[in-house]
Length: 388
Image (cartoon, rainbow, N blue to C red; front, side, top):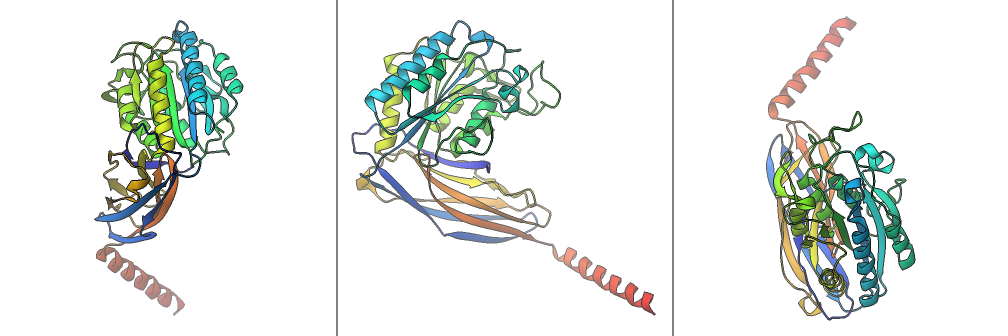
């Protein structure tokens, strides 16, 4: 699974159109660039996206919650909220929606929590009974300190949504589906490489991704996140972990992808269900987001890019086709020789539409070439001397 640095364009929408088929293309088909050591160059990609009112839109919804001991007084309410949301989606949206269920505890709780940062209880399925069984089977317990594991778990969900090769993280998602996370919890999350649990086992330092990296991972998949905070705004999952950065976590995550944060959630409400159903029906029926993502190259030539993200808002139906635009990014070469090959990926409603291969390479400085030539000449002279 390649990790992604994301460039995101996100729109929220409620529509009454028929299910849409989304297609698109990037141009040019390939880019080849040559950089001097440390040189910065700019590259432009054009995209075109079409919407047609035919075909079946699909959506995948992941229910994710904290199940540490502090959730003891909240877990039954969250289970009720999750079950009601699932039932409402099934009733109002109908076919074309799959669901998965997962939870997180602390690193020290072991098992899947320390191996992956998340415990997958039910892979994506259309079976409502299987989903509700998984939701109802969760219970609160364990946990060893107040900050929790949501940054790790959210990042893992994004990175492995469509991965079917990693045991324990086979979510069974698809690249074509609209992707939604419904996340619940009561505590701020560990964030950043220097943030680790007081009870962490050896080797866990650096375990937690930063808030910024978590947002990038979610946006790279075009994932829409709805957060159910058991306490008030600015606290709980919306708290600030200043060791990482001074932003309210759930507010930042939901806003970055166009989702919604709900505070002081007990057992849910019809207003929460209305908002989520509107997002699903809008995403199935209308083009709701366009994402252009840079897949990171290998470590042999660590190029860097700017900007890392971009947002565009609007409302697009069949009569708006094609939706066109361009993205320009600057790439800066390292100060060592090497080649980086990666893809720029175009997503619509979280589904992959097209990709362009980019190959960037560095060339040695003139002084290095001269020294290399002198070195080769010296070796040849020494060999000739030795043969005399």
